[in-house]
Amino acid sequence: MASVTLRDCFLCVSAFINFIFVFVTGADFVRFVSFRAIYHNLSGGAPLCRESVSWSVALRDGAVLRAVAVDVFLLVLFSVQHSLLAWGPVKRACQNLLGVLTRTMYCFTTALALQVLMRCWQPVTSAPCLWSVQNTSWDIYFPLICFILHFLCWAIICSILLIFDYPELLGIKQVYYECLGLGDPLSLKSPRAQRLFAHLRHPVCVELLAVLWVLPTFPVDRLVLAVYLSVYLMAAHSLDTQDCTYLNRQLQTKLKVFCAPLEDNDQSNNNLNKQD
Image 1: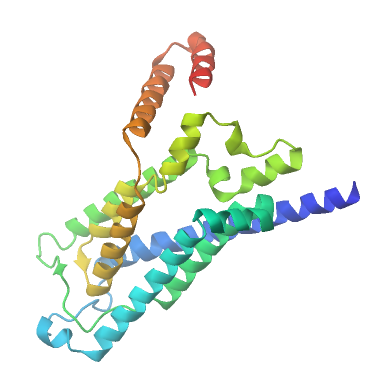
Image 2 (image 1 turned 60 degrees about the vertical axis):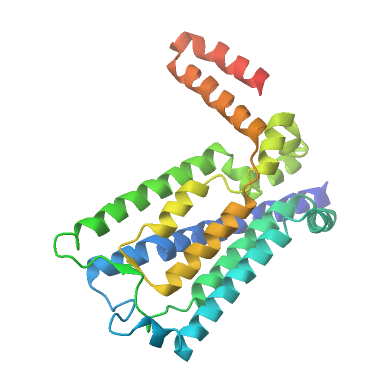
């Protein structure tokens, strides 16, 4: 009994440390992707690019090429980590080695790769911007519009993560179920839900694309980040007609639950559970 208790404590502490690290990294990523670029425009900080330099000169500048090379390397490093650990053979090997902590380890290493990317990212300030809103009438309003759009996108992303069972995505639910002897929480879901989770790699694709591309100032390093992550998101998108039909059915059923009278909610919830 003592060894089981110590093991359970170790699992819970590991899951808690992972949760804190992933949460902090997520906040840093929001700052890195969204509000740093927008706040720069609003505060009149140091320029993100040099408009006086022509593209022909910038593309021959060694500093520009080195910065782009470093940024691309960091993105490749992140995508290799993110995809390699999700690959079937590697995932099974990790499962055999780490057991219930497999998902925790995946989220921790993903957050670690993101931290390396953000800390080592090289801004390209010696090249022109692809665009920069500097018109007097739009210099304040367009960054404000971008701020509101980004805020709404991140709010939607957080909502979607909660709907898709945030504790399970972080590996917390797996540890909780293991300590209670309930098994793998994913195995308790319906086959259609398991199929959806296997195909739906990134449930926040549209919102992330909006966050990546809609900015008042768009320097070269931002182009590298936006193009690479957009291609990566699209490549990982594998939903098919059956998945979309299942999602639509679930959405319609939940809308009926929300719109039903209060006394009918319990019966509607039971029907939803049976269908799922």
